[in-house]
Image 1: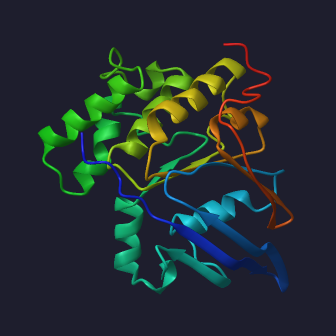
Image 2 (image 1 turned 120 degrees about the vertical axis):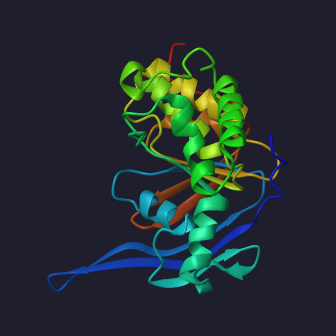
Length: 245
């Protein structure tokens, strides 16, 4: 296992994102202010269209804001060169998506090891790290199963292991329970709390599903392109009201 993440503070000030199409301007983000400290486990809530996923993409270095600042440890993220942004995405950030995006013809072990192999890690080191994480997420008996042989919840566990294999400082999860039933969604959120959340790492889960409340120590609520509320809370309180594990 690699050394613990040292942590990065993230600051957003007046972040906007507008899209222009056929002479029409769509303002998806309209001035977001948000402070994220190392170790934060944040549920980013809001209805569809509130700007949650766009904000996640901006934090992950995938698309720049139209206006405003995104600071990583006080340094502007989007002042970096494209090569530096690519290094940030590959080294500092892990992504978990709703639909897993696993390589269908490769087994779980290969899927999880892939980011390390792309980064140039030796094959043995990458596979050892991938196997350790798959065992940590409860898939030690499924190392050589391809995605089609795994349940939806198991595929999401593989995706979480893949997102953590390079030990990122920032983990961004976009609707990780939306495609799962109540039981699997509960298990995935418990897994994020137990495996992904730790000192120094910021974990953000985007959702409109209140089951994520039990994961978070902070709730940030979005509406119409702005953060309207940030609330500190006790993780586990009122967790997963619709789940029956």
